[in-house]
Length: 51
Image 1 (tube, rainbow, N blue to C red):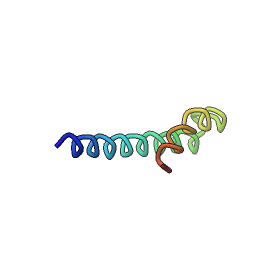
Image 2: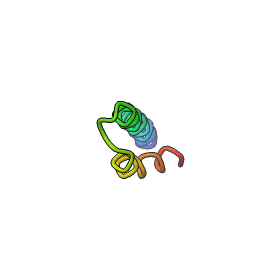
Image 3: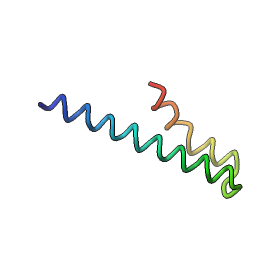
Image 4: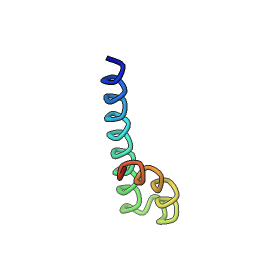
């Protein structure tokens, strides 16, 4: 049972990271944040999603 909860948490975390990266992409596209800020904020999230 603990294993299922752990898997659910991992799925939710991946979903939240994907949402975060999508928001950053929109902010970059609308020139609200710079490319550098986008890269700094998204680098670890994208790495996590690719695991």
